[in-house]
Structures are given as C-alpha cells and as structure tokens.
Length: 255
Image 1 (tube, one colour):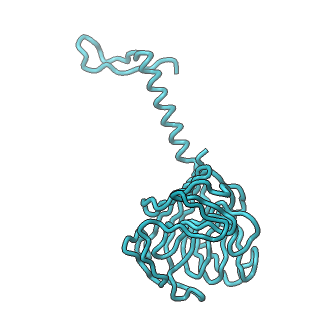
Image 2 (cartoon, rainbow, N blue to C red):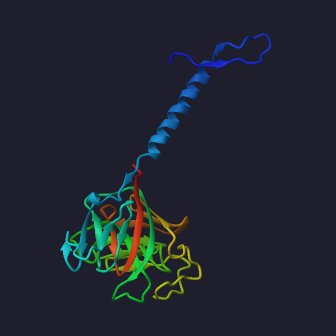
Image 3 (cartoon, rainbow, N blue to C red):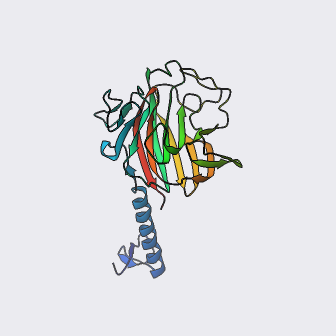
C-alpha cells in the first residue's frame, strides 16, 4: 500500500470523496496494525501438552511404560484421569523445558487408596525434573494437596530460595501463607482456603523465568522463589494415592 485514505464527511465546502491522510498518520496506523498482529501471534504461541504422545508413564510398582491397572486414562474429551492407585507419574518425553508459564486446570475425583485412604488428597505438578525415574525424581514440585495447594517442595537434589531461606537437596517444603493450621485428612479445607470446593475445576499457573519460580492458584499468588536449581527439565504429573483429573496443561514460552 503506497497511500492511506480517509473519507471527508460533512466538512464545509468539501465533497465526500477519499482524501489522502497525512504521512505521519499513515505511519502510525501501520505501526499499530503491525503491533496488534505481533501481539496476536504471541498470544497464539502455546504448546498444548495434554496429549498422550507427549508423555511416558512411570509407576513404582511396574516401572517405565507399564500400567497394568490403568492408573493413567485419557478420556474421549481429552481429559486425563489419574486414579492414584500406584505411586508414580506421567513425565514429558521432552527433557529441557525452560522459561515458560504453565497453566494447569485440575479437580479431585472421589477415590483414594492406601496408604493415604483417609488422608488429604495429594498430587502435584513437578517441574525442572531430571535424573533417573524413581519416586520421586529430582525436581521442584508445585504442590496440589487438600488444604495446601500452592506450596512448593524441593525434591531429591533440587534447591530453591524463598524469603531468604534456601532449601535442598533433601525433600523440603515451603508452606504457602495462610495454609496453617492444617490437618492431613480427607476433604480438609483450611481457614484461608484458595482451592475451590470438591468437584470444581481449579487453575494453577507456574511461572518459570530463568531461576525464578512463581505459583498462582485460582488467581492468588502463593509463593515465589529464586535461585532454582535445576532451572530446566521435564514436567511431571503425579499419581500419589488420590484420584485427580486434568483438563488443561498449556505451556506458554517466555522467550
């Protein structure tokens, strides 16, 4: 396009005919259009991870790729149902995820299993995972547990600093503000609960920006840490004694 036009309407002495707009106006308009196009393209830059081909299974009872009791079930609408019967996880086949925002939508089922038959329903999304497949691999866990969803754990060799306190390499937990007092019992809801009632979908956002990790649950920022080590790796969804469903696991690259 070599020119930009506008229509002169109801201007005294001027007929309603196309008129050439000022050059500066044209440049500004084209810049706005280009910017809007770039913003639109950026919004569309998303990886929909919740597809069977993106994962492999590991169960403590049967190893890699063996799921005789159908712990991991993909439903017709694309929802992932994890029974929780055996400890383990689905792990991404890709091993080097870094610098992203991960959006997960989940809700609890009704089934629990020993040894957590009457305990709070427990699961989690593990990030920056690596090392050998085991319960549990080196990672940083965005905790999903009744009454404590939004906590962060460092697991088997990982490190993180929150509020000037560094934890790791042993398994250790950072409690989200308002979590306590807490009871490890089925159906527990705390006095400052941010998780929605059973049967409703929850949204968790995990921001991984360099060595920074931030968690939000249903719009509430729970914890933010720095000096994450490692700062890249696999993504896992746990099976840990309670039935849980995921309908979304979307990754938005930051770079």
